[in-house]
Image (cartoon, rainbow, N blue to C red; front, side, top):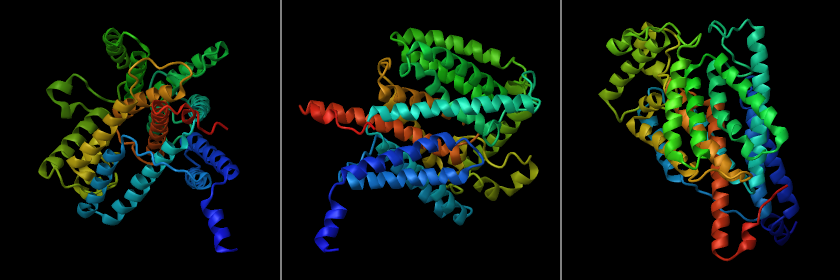
Length: 436
């Protein structure tokens, strides 16, 4: 092949191939959303993630047109990555931290920016939303069947629902992450036929969340429900007051429900917190110890990765129960691992996401990008609350977080791009997009 012919093949556009590659990238991404919560198929998860990234790159090559969408998270992410790299030099186990940096941070960034650039039309977001709902329906049906078949009861937490996830903790986190998309689904599917299936799925998912006996998940979906009601309201101040009061009442009722106590004696929470007992008592003792370690050297991290805690503090691990192998709080974990600068970075990321995606007016039915952004803002808030009592900002839940955030910001960039094109008196540019 001549040099000119090779140059033409490599550097000229190929519209037919671009369409094919984009379809394949989207199929892999949609598959990833569905299989992420399925514990036993990690190989398929890795293949789906690699496939969507590869075919997205090929799509832009064949299209011969690429504009990098940095998003509002660009500088917060640079800050976060810098703190993780810096932690290598103070890590208790540099080899382990380097592996975690590749597995969690680098992969998370790739998944995030693939999600950002996948959105070429609002219809793409509706497809992802539909797969989220299908996945939730499958996980909910399987979870309830498994729960009752294994002897689960709605009156005690001896058996806790795990569905097809790796356990009740990850299942509870997954339910928190998808709950807002279910609540706001009528914005995209307002048809009368969709109301009964939506109501049935909402009630079934709520029941499954209860059956996890994951109290952090209970509180998180309560917060998300309140946020979604505020988003949909035109009189937001009044709604905040009414919904806030109702949420406090519901939260109080939650902690009188069967299975809401895991050995705690709440009367000691104020007078002697470390003697509260139960799961809460263990966490308070763990956080008290973690605070003392952070206070000694706030800017020196022990290295990225949850297992760094066990490596850095073997005496604590030896004298406490096996489940306390990390700080069981995403923010405390990252402060220990990266220093207070790491805490600042992750708080900045979460705050910027909520600020950028929060709808200034009620989402309009049929506007997928606006509705998806609103649901994602509620997801981020619930994810943060749920992870105040554990740390699931890793593995499949971490990957799903980055993918959903990327898709939402991709929709935001799409809207901004169209508005800019219209502002430049080029309405034809606002209609550009692949809708297949």
